[in-house]
Amino acid sequence: MNIDNSVSIVGCGISGIFAALELKKSGIENIKLFDKSRGLGGRLATRRANEGKFDHGIQYIRLDGISHLPEIEDLIKNNILIETKVPDLFVGYDGMTSIAKFLAKDLDIYKEFKLLSISDGPDSMEMSFENGEKINTDSLILSSPIKQSIEILERSSVKISQPKLESIKKLEYYPTIIVMVESESPINLNNEFFTECSEGFFSSITDNFIKGISKKENFYTLVCSHDFSSKNFEKDYDYINSHLQAELNIMFKGEYNILSNHKWRYSTPKDFYLPDDSLQISSNSFIGMCGDIFTNGKFDGAIKSGISVAKKLLIE
Image 1 (cartoon, rainbow, N blue to C red):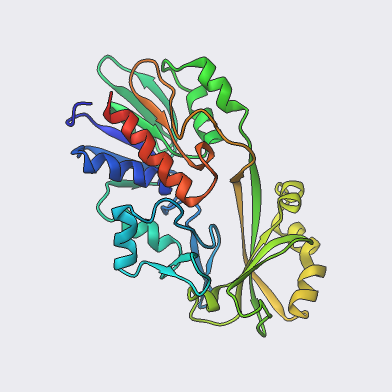
Image 2: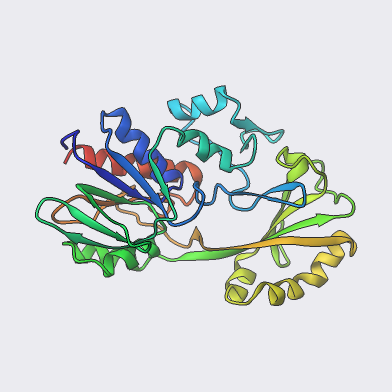
């Protein structure tokens, strides 16, 4: 591609960030990233509550196959990415969001920009955003969850490959409900910062103090199971929390307070796009797609997908 051309990346999760970083390393400067939320990082998400702190998305990461990347080495060297007492498990020093913030510190990011549609123009594509902004771009990378990207494409007037579109429409995600709890006293997680649950309404429990995220003790992140989350995702939080009450009472001996909840509609891929680590779906101007659903549903896979789509664009 011409290094003077503009590139827009929709979604500021780890996949979109690494797509931008890969393009910058190749000399592309005119890169803009857009995210519909007020933050960045996607499920690298951290929240404060009642003087404590929770990670309420990804709880830890592994560096399988990506530890050699200069960006990962830089995170470790600057003490942003910290290895825990559990070998090969890493967390963000000041919460998982700190990883995304460090990586994106030199990127041009536009928050609260929700992309609605794309249209072909004579020389470039025009992006229309919910806030009324219209921005032209030569190339586009969609790194948001694939269901959201499909909705954008179906509202758009751009030339895309219908067979490729049909192949990704089949892909699904598990939703996840997160519960953030402050308890009166600690619970035993066998001296580790997290435990995985094989039964009940929760799939994992994380102690954010032992993990090193919260300066205040007894702040726990509870991830609801796929089954519970799927059945109750559309319910309001009062309903959800009331159904969790009996299990929470046993776990915390009745001495706890739910400080916050969060829902991730597109949390964990049920299945994956097998042909490649990313996808070019356009038949005219470059429109690429990336994300963890193209690889393994994990942090390292999202990074590999972002790099993959950037390389596809560079050879255009």
